[in-house]
Image (cartoon, rainbow, N blue to C red; front, top):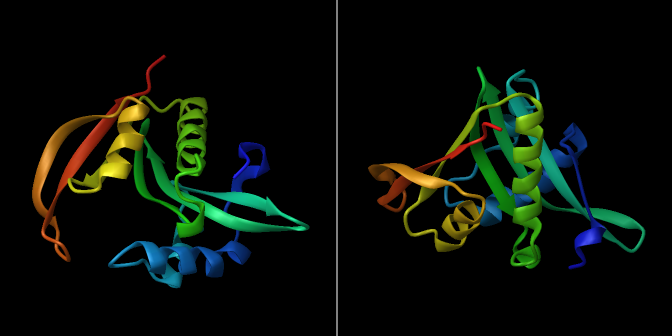
Length: 155
């Protein structure tokens, strides 16, 4: 996919059905439509979508949900549509999260990732995240440990 054909914008209500479809095909325990709608109402929540330009329309290729509270960023969800993976979209989304977070004055960013999720770990490590904690058997559906990863955003 051509990197220039990706536009990252704020999530709107009209995006939610398409996002739920991606969510359902990505996560073993997906968030519901209501959870995404609620995220759009929470002042601390930031919600971005990556839209791929295809012919005359735009398709949501990925999304991220993160919170900014008291100078800290917590990434809750990041996902890319299956047929758009390995095309740099997750990197574009992550770069935008970090850019926006620094603009807001955030000083650190944390997230949790399954220890067995090699692709996600590589993405986060590429941006400089390091493991600061391991939460044993954090993911109930798989029994996988969670790696808590952190990135210092200070200038």
